[in-house]
Image (cartoon, rainbow, N blue to C red):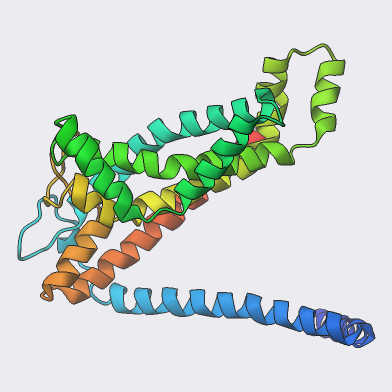
Length: 295
């Protein structure tokens, strides 16, 4: 056992010595860029660890079974209705946005002409829509779905608003993932006698799955963390909502109980659960992406 530990220590020292020698051989500009890159990476990791540590330390101390009661009241401020509404919102929004985004990316990338002005306009419009503040989407959803279509403050109005909000993100990420697939994949498929549609769905799409899933994960994070747009569309009733009923998500729930000033500690616990849900969804999405890629 000691021999194995001594051998590992020796290998570590040799690796450190080789790393330092390679570092000294670099020219000053490359060395500066290298050290800046390292500093940036560790800074991001440090901020992430600090943020997660703060949320979990503050939140886990006040995590109680009463926070997971089926019904919300002023004594338990249960987050269970908000959790169910959040998962429903994620599922319905992605059910609308994912097919439109992925199929739209396939059409633009595989069937559209590269020199088309319409495609360039669509690309600019999509990138612009990605950067629009969420409260603008909320106002649009309020005017369009709540008032004009008569859905009122409801989960459905919130889902439609969020699906429009994440659609450009999924479209652009799917388009970039399809562009990253080498042209040789398509040529090899055509050489084997496969048609264009079969090539897209049997060869190109599986190869682009990791990039598409990355865009979907970003969309999920945007849906789960959204509050401004939902205050205008699905409002903030603390109950398990039907599609035509008003209901709050976890982010809205956290905003309301923290703004009231009476349940700040429970707000930290809600934030911790929100982070865990996002991490869980990301983990499951990555597993699904690997399964699809292997298939």
